[in-house]
Length: 201
View 1 (cartoon, rainbow, N blue to C red):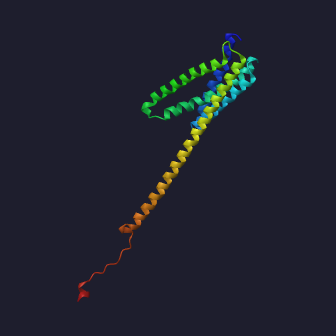
View 2 (spheres, rainbow, N blue to C red):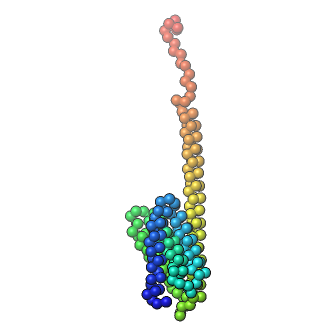
View 3 (cartoon, rainbow, N blue to C red):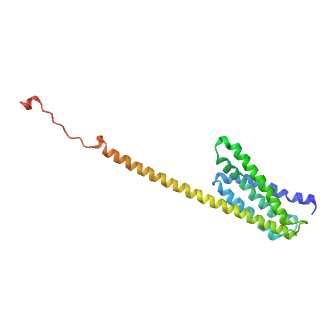
């Protein structure tokens, strides 16, 4: 494969990444921030597994299909990751959170390219590229499972805090009722008799 052909091979992945970002934004309106991360990473993992199973001895179109799946899944996760990072801090620190997210993303990309490049080997081989795809699929599946676990923990926490607030509201209502029962206005009034001068005489 020529360098130009290799560059053109990643063009469908880039276009799928753009489309996935748009789809992730729409998905985010109908789900919590962890839904796109779960399904996006899982989709990319399926694309990486398909790429490893297909191999690199086929035509460009056959290889481009799983690459599009990888790009689509990666794009779905972008809006939710940005929202999760910005929503975790105060508005005054949103710039700091955005910078940390971009730095972590670039650092992870550099480390991933180095590790997967080492698996591909030099000179690169089809077997090494397949192993790199398998490792990438495992990492993406792990990210999807981690997002699902965090989502479950957050739902459990919110459900527990909601029940605690309801119990607190009930106890407060009962306490207010007891106070109302014990208040002077709630006690039955006893009629008072006044001795008039006529009765005294």
